Length: 187
Image (cartoon, rainbow, N blue to C red; front, top):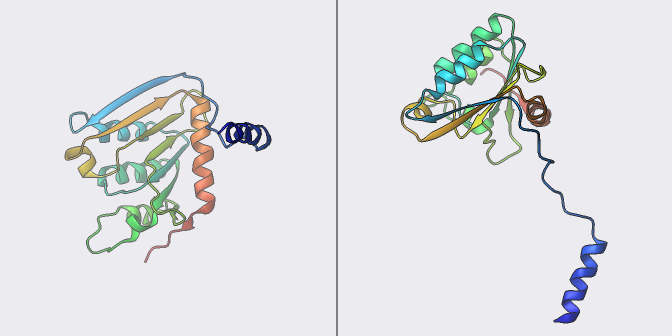
């Protein structure tokens, strides 16, 4: 037993360290939280989208919210750069029974890419003006961009504003996924 413990100690000294989590980020800015079905999470997201000035980057597992799709299209029309990453299976499965808003976003000229590398691309985020220091917002949580997430499910969102380091970390991750995703083409 002593030999096994000694061998483990030697291996710990010789082997490279395992990958670790990122360094903690500073806690700055403000936080807004919403819990469905009691709070109007969709309204909070739409208000944030309406306040965007430069960019909106979306990463969605399921996207059936017509109201959010409309807000993103309106943002694009007022000159905000909007781009979307979506889970491939959820965005393209059975178009007759699927209420995905991905085709409507693409038809409005919003670039959409589909994540195909993962079993499930389960991120649910919006990055608003992520390159800006003071006005950046990261929206994340369990909340899918659907009617059910607002009206039927127990979900949560966090809207984290004014934390440039956090926005940068999320934006870098978004671009990493973007590089692996496939361009969506309207059928």
